[in-house]
Image 1 (cartoon, rainbow, N blue to C red):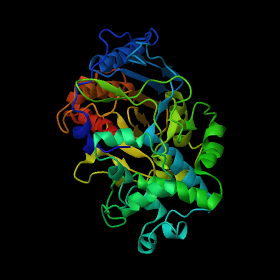
Image 2: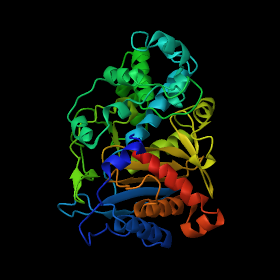
Image 3: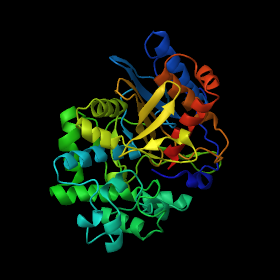
Image 4: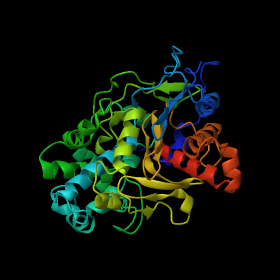
Length: 408
């Protein structure tokens, strides 16, 4: 969820992990599974304390894991762990909004002032539509850039319980990024407002609506909304941020009320993959509504490799095709989930440290290792270096760019 502007403030120290930390058991005996495990081991060797993934190709599944759950105990990472998935929550919420659109309870091109007249300033409420919230073209400021300005704010954030209306007002009071509808500008405020609209039109909490419409029908029993409960229920990796003198600070116990509809979901790689396969396969939305979700705007008009953003989902080009999904970053836990257009080829990757990049532009060994893993997972066993060479390096830059957005 957090923007990369804070990397320079927070990641001043080098990530350190216990030497020789053991990886989880190798993934299967097939060569592709072994390659995935080796590449995830390389992510850990580059400095990431712990990482895991679930990769699918049709009915085949691989679950590599590397590093440690807790740097204090050295317990190895294993498949099936729960994880704060951050802004991947936005895809769950957008799916619910689109279902309500199909039921004629929400209009994508309806001004948001019609739903939230007491919260949104009148002029803005007439100009910004629901669609603009979902594709981040509203121009409304991002509340997290207002509440997180220094490293110490990360500590304060985890001790503060926020109401969603409070988050919305902070974002609405911030300087606008552009005129409504004029350009893409990522803002978590958009999805807090979208969640409040769901509550207004249904009379239920947005959590209850997502649970009823998505989680229960798909059997996503390891997915839930964390809210102000600072403890992650079930087995999980610890969450770290580089702090001082090369040490990691543990942010595992953390109040997530500041994320609300923009990023408070806890899930597993398996549940996230199950969700995206159902979504892209047409189980959650009609063909017409899925087409609306996949109607995109450029994230950076000057850089096609940055991909395009739809309604709670983005698309990025790789050498083997265009992949759909979302990323998510919280205070320590980060996740990247990408899927082929038909949902058959899938990868959800997660790791346990945020803000480890020490330069806003220079490549980081961890990012380079993640990039190779992601390209192999989605494009097959051909080495990522070969794919990168064939595309003039664009593949590595594209995935690295997508991964770096985890810092937002």
